[in-house]
Image 1: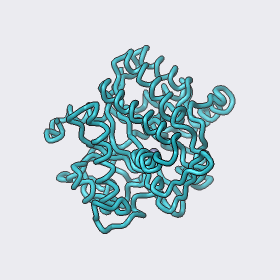
Image 2: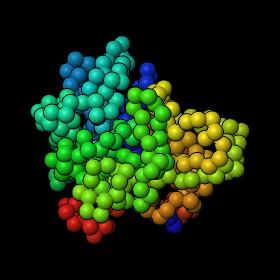
Image 3: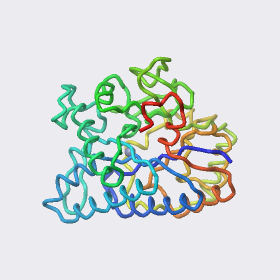
Image 4: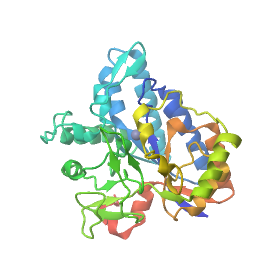
Length: 349
Ligand SMILES: [Zn+2]
């Protein structure tokens, strides 16, 4: 059986149609908890904390938002009570989100943390330092109701936008966060405003670094746990294309929103990259059992699987259940893995 780390981004969509908390977050994560429990699996939920922050800010005026906030809080408590792990995920565009006619309205001037101020004022959420500090405080306040010794240990930047890391480093360090899980080898985006390029990321399962996740450093203060990427050769990709378009078509999803237009440009690139080999993230979302089994077989033991609750479908759940039942995979949380490593003595508690 191949043991893998399971990390789940817990968030709404970011486009014109964000979807509902019930269908994008609560229902899929509840199902995931149920099947993991049967096979003794654990996961790390990367909680989009500024969504929750915004709900709290606006709930005095809008009863629906208070209801959403309570649903999330209850599920976070359940996750922790059942031994799953909750860590920090930040999408700063929530700071500008407006609630109009029962829908979220977004602007993307602050899609990346790097668009916040550099002043280092912990009291202002408009600064990088303030945003990370207040997000951590809010998470610890909520999580400690279920787990009194809870601390935020790991960070995942929204939409892979963790570089340039040196602008985030001090704020993470001050908040006791030394693990990052934002990067993925081979992934890149040609989006003109928020590009990123991980085609030269170190290929270790996890490694130390200081000012950039792109440069491994033996004595680095921070640790990167990248999402696993699997190289798929051109002829297999042709077969994948066939499966996706003619065999396993349109499996739907729990999530009832729509994907944000510009995140679609990730890893697209020039026409010539459409043929030949390419990196796939190790994820069951949007997959069928044949492709999923192929990726699992090629992945390294203890590699990190990523999943977005909003993109899950009943089909995804059945597929994961089948691979756990056949003992092809077992899942553990990022924190469980961190605690197995001797170098992490300071993260044991
Ligand atoms: Zn996200």
